[in-house]
Length: 263
Image (cartoon, rainbow, N blue to C red):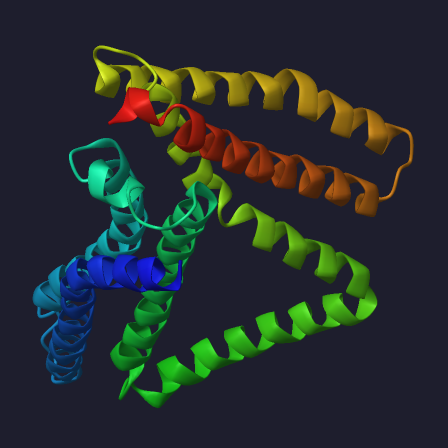
């Protein structure tokens, strides 16, 4: 599984490196243009901020593209390497279906976190050299936010742990849900891509109905009964964790027992 994970990471970052480079380039160009426009405004030219706005917009779009690409490439590789011609090679590797799923999932999560790290580092590049007044105001806001966050942790450490657990179980759920839809779509003989789309649409509708008519009433009833926020948090944690586990083992079952239908 380790070799497969390494291969998946190389395949993902071979593409993501161009998105990351674009983010850094636009951060540098946006910072340069902003410095030029600030100097022009200070010299009395009030109409010299158009180029910096354009480059900053491109920078924001590049960050969005990087984060979305990290997720989309993970989904694309799951489909391409399992349910197209490459599936013959992938499924013939000396790796169990569980190992294949873990490699796909972990590589996608690592790519998503790497995209977030690159975005934060590019923001640091963009902020370098800004006028001290702007940075000091931003620093005060960040310091106040961190102080409030720290005070909330000290006041309710259990709630912080619960939020951390919810974050951990919530990260893979979007990937696993799409993996499940892709896997279910392969069970059909014809129009598999269309069936994937239909399954995604049906799943989205079911999630919205379940949230509106099942989860929300239960949450409201527990709140009205005076139940603590911890009970509500653990209810959400268990629901998300159950979704993760259910999707994971459903995908494993399809890969292990329905492989003849897929390749």
